Image 1 (tube, helix red, strand yellow):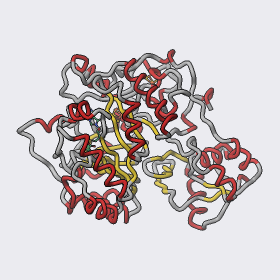
Image 2 (tube, protein in one colour; image 1 turned 135 degrees about the vertical axis):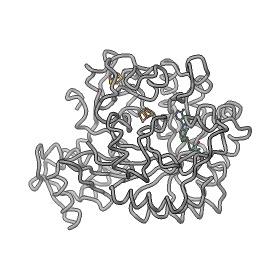
Image 3 (cartoon, helix red, strand yellow; image 1 turned 45 degrees about the horizontal axis):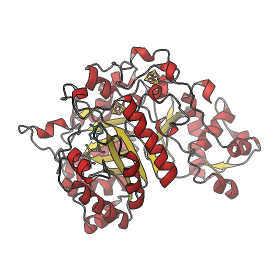
Length: 460
Ligand SMILES: C[S@@+](CC[C@H](N)C(=O)[O-])C[C@H]1O[C@@H](n2cnc3c(N)ncnc32)[C@H](O)[C@@H]1O
Ligand code: SF4
Ligand code: SF4
């Protein structure tokens, strides 16, 4: 098990300028709740903790992080200087060209914004704010002009499930790089989600994903989801490959979330807290959420599924929202028999050929390592990380420090050829040969978040 999370979702303030109908931050509507903000001093303390415990990536979120501008700027500056990658989740409505410039100078590079429909009325209904869509579109243009990469998140539910294709068109026209069609996970205080327009049934979910795939083909926009769909609802894992692989980051132990008051959660949607990070430290609160990491929350209907290591029974917070059980059924679950086309990892043949011909590879300086109990975590970029054997890690760390190329004949550890191929496929190592590097550059299947070692043998 991991010693600390790979990434932290840090809420800089619980306050928000919008009150989206679907938002999991359900307490914001409660007049007795008080607003929490991370101060600049507390941010500095958190940064020190993250450096000490080897956190690789931080998502600065909220509430609305632009409502805590000073801390946001400080966080971007300190984390970037420490070599920790960052992203910001923001509705962008408060951005200006001047603020974009300041944040960019502090290290800002990427934002995930919220855009729920091409149709202003539906978007503004969902986000509970008249004129919201117009402001967000203007803001997207502002930050793109300021040199920031933009992804957009569309929360799919009854109101907008048929709006995916046109929203993707709008995003592509604006220069948004990726659109996520994220299923709505009802907040814990919603009694009967199926009796509200916060619902999403299997048919609606699949239609939304079909339209997103069509949009990718027609507009060239990258696609994905931020909340996992159970793989069995997808059925054809080749067709829906853009939605396979991320799994549930909370169960994987990849992610931990911190509220602005320091209380930790495994999943952003969760009401249960695991202690205050300022009292227990990152590893302390992380250790308190072991039930998320040890398989306790897997649904019994998944026991025979060969994809359970990747899928992890879909979304546990959705299961809780519908059935009030952490190990309950994901409402979109169909059952393992429905997976009729397996996921096939497409490792370019050029990689295996290069390994077999004794070609040389290098460990890029961007690669980060963290020692765990009995193995290492290797971080490729952002929150993309996987486990490797200790021997292999020591070998790679040495090669990275000395800038020395190496080939299969020097490789250490078990299954040396397979390990080398997987490392190259995950972009943890790069070929020295410029021509091969160019051939592989930009191949979409490379660097994917799936760990080939976790796939069922039939699919490798
Ligand atoms: C809580 S918001 C905070 C950042 C910012 N205020 C915004 O709206 O983008 C973070 C992300 O969570 C997503 N989100 C909120 N409620 C959700 C829900 N019930 N199910 C799935 N995603 C949700 C939002 O769409 C947004 O991308
Ligand atoms: S049976 Fe369970 S683990 Fe398998 S794909 Fe379905 S939800 Fe995921
Ligand atoms: S339970 Fe897992 S998949 Fe569901 S929202 Fe939380 S982290 Fe994502």
